[in-house]
Image: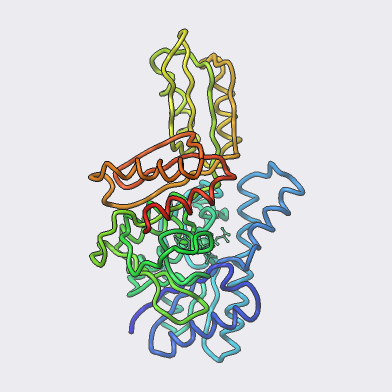
Length: 401
Ligand code: ADP
Ligand code: ASP
Ligand code: MG
């Protein structure tokens, strides 16, 4: 018994039936003697639909107004879930991100939580209420509504658990745990009983959307006990924790990320300081650059290619346009038709055969590699989008994880 934070994603609150199902899980936990805080996402595909509505009117709408719009999805869910819990006869209060005290920075569309004023939350808990909080949203210091980035409700839940020193943070979703690859894509994917914060952070950052990467970062920082489990079936899920000793697998998982774009600067001057100018200008706009490739210079020019998140592509192109006098490049190209496929595992650094085995699996499947990047804990390749699902399956098969 203690304080439990439970988070339910979009598919888990998709319709009235699913909401009643969530209400049952929540009230069972409360009836067992726990204090319960619940975080919910927008129903089903609501967030995508809201984005579409905005694009119909203005594809270049400001990020501030996008946040005002997108935050409404979660507000619908908190009210409906609270009504369902009222119907079951339990005391409940729904709170928006602002009411729950979530204060963020001002990076609209991708804000970071700065702090949570937990007075209102603890007041409601002290009164014996089940507290339902809108995920994915907060306000900045000017009281403007902000959102935390796609999938950000996970981070709202972990932040609540950290600030209120919850005994457990449960992320309920539409799969029954974390697998060695997306179980909807790879039938032979295996469910993990446990995974370390570091490995999960890599998987999440590389596209395994089952957890928002910042939620894992925060869980690690504040040592929040985290569990991913099914909202539909009652069975144990996957525990995310500091170290795991159950299995020392070399490879923990395979992930893909479709939401990337490759930018290429062709024929840029081959002089010192060029890379610095490009990447500092992108950093100033908070654009994350991932895999970078630079060709060997010839005729005093070279080519530089790199990947950015798809959502930042247009802004990155603007930045490069703004630099055209400095770069004197022949051409700037962009390509969205790419996917990043990665393998993750803590044992990788000391095992030289891993990269070769991954590349062999891709070669056997006749899949061309455009870019490669490696680190101690992962290897990523950029390939054509149409090959992505085959690549994940082939790599998963090769390592039989
Ligand atoms: P929610 O709406 O509950 O937040 P998401 O769609 O964000 O759910 O995340 C759950 C989905 O993540 C699953 O349906 C699954 O397809 C996908 N997924 C990707 N990689 C993995 C993985 N390694 N393990 C489990 N699920 C994964
Ligand atoms: N509703 C938001 C999204 O679709 C946040 C979330 O689901 O976590 O990205
Ligand atoms: Mg999610």
